[in-house]
Image (tube, rainbow, N blue to C red):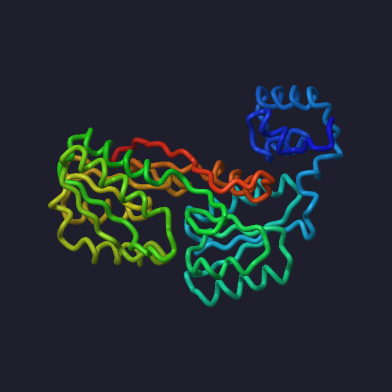
Length: 328
């Protein structure tokens, strides 16, 4: 095999992630029979030599990756961390996780610590620090759900299409007065999650359907506090709408509780769609939320692949899909 062939090339040829190739080669972790056979065929074709698995990471020094999230106890970020750690563990790397708590100075201290520790790469899933600050670091950086100018790559789910799917589903279910409960806009940080609102409103306009957006402050707090915030922000307006799309599943569940408390029947009087389909949503038995799923495993694999990419990739958008439940 040519010395220019590495694990990334094998993954591309087999149509799988680098983590899956690594698990196959090292016989560590589950790989489906069909997938394993396909990878083994590619390995044989390329004349792969097992001790070359480290080729794609030959520039690594500490074999560590730093990751900054707003709050690791949040359902979605907890799952994303798990998937990232699983992916890099298969590559013999370690993950250092820090919480920014949406605190600007805290995040800057974390970034400085990672730089001093000489981590081999950074995954930034926090949206606290301004764009200019990231340019000071020579460490490879990849963003999650945030566009940063000047060539810093990013990975995101297809937020815009997620909003479109939510609006179209509610309209197909007969809704004619739509509400979107989203996060407060912060254009300074180019948060791609805001595209959910644009996709949602766009579909409503195309169908001549009335739609309103409420922006709610979204601190990463315990659910009881989140419920209080949602209750105060919606007050007595839910009765004016027949379909609501929430920016995440925790909000959707809070709206479900608030609506039923106000004697609204779900889904007869009000239909509810969330976003994420995290493990919280999957284990929630009543109600079974209708939601837009963003695939954490695929997001994690793309974050790792783009971080170590030699092809200067700038962005990867991960598909989303509608998961139907009993709230619509």
